[in-house]
Length: 488
Image 1 (cartoon, rainbow, N blue to C red):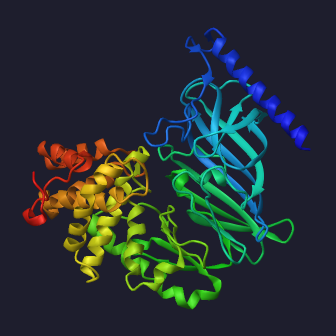
Image 2: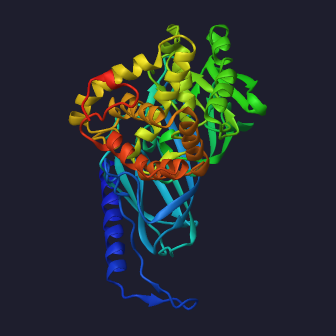
Image 3: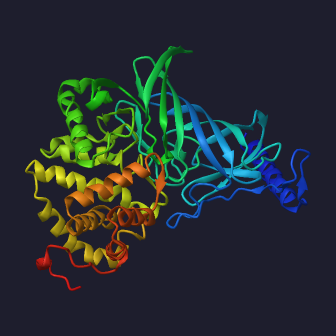
């Protein structure tokens, strides 16, 4: 079997390469329906992200993902089909999808079998698809990838799977691990709507981003649970799971649907905690001056196997350790803030990640201050003093050399605190409200944020101020705090 598979893959690679070469060499020709030359070429294997140049793929824009995922607990085997509706942004002879450790069985484009091959990528693998007929710019097309695998297969990149002691799993896909679950265009700049069809044995409970739209029987004493996410989502915010877990339902402000997931044997412990979410939602809506941007929200607390917290869109994921701390609500507010900053307004590149983390840290600090956990001035001063050295080693908040550093979390929050000190509370609030309103459900960059601040304030000097805070290798002086010990 291994030898036959090797020949098949080599043949597919050779066919894809030949098709791409022929497409590049063919002279431009007009179709009978238009005088525009049709010159198909391969889509790029990356979008040129400053931190991860080969993440994502060029040549198309995904409009919708439809994932069918049949999972077997304990063994972690799965069989799946990903259907993608996309729109070509150039004439395409071939295009790529991001995958990692998925065994691809079949690929079709517009219903016709396509040639495919997998090759190395920067953080995983590239699935190169050559359709039977080249694709024309601005035309929609459909891709279907049938594949299988095992969730405990060691990926080429970092794992996206989190394993539970009950034999289930939860996805933690940020920043580029959605490709360990499904073929995707794995960059935050390509957001799409999603539907999910998660199949598991009866007695197990699946969950996914968006609304649960139905349950139905499936072969072999299984059930399929259907979910729909109507608002666009970047792949890195994928939140799927199958566990021994229970749903807890409620309503938030102005009828926002709340659905939480907790271990089924710990319902009494976690129900009062997740029911605090409605009050947190109301506080953030009042503080931001902007309604919650989605139809539903929930907190997912897993029994074990995960120790962090993550803002999966409409369903934030938490390890149980957070809730052993008396200040756990600060972390809940942090991840909830991300639903506005990062999930609704998503960074254009990963180097803009401070736009996600800075507001989440800042508004969680405001929450903590108002509840007497820790004074915001104390937190910001400590971060300010640490940031000066971090700027030189890991880059300033607006130009980090990597993800996950202090600079894009607390350092970015300090930059927002400086803006608030410079502008005053009312004008700062107006800047943040305009940001969330203008770029709702879209992508935006650091430049966009600065431009927005200048426009809202009508003060051109705000551009210079923010550029110093976001890009300088030394801390600028903090407005209103001359005793914080820096020179202009």
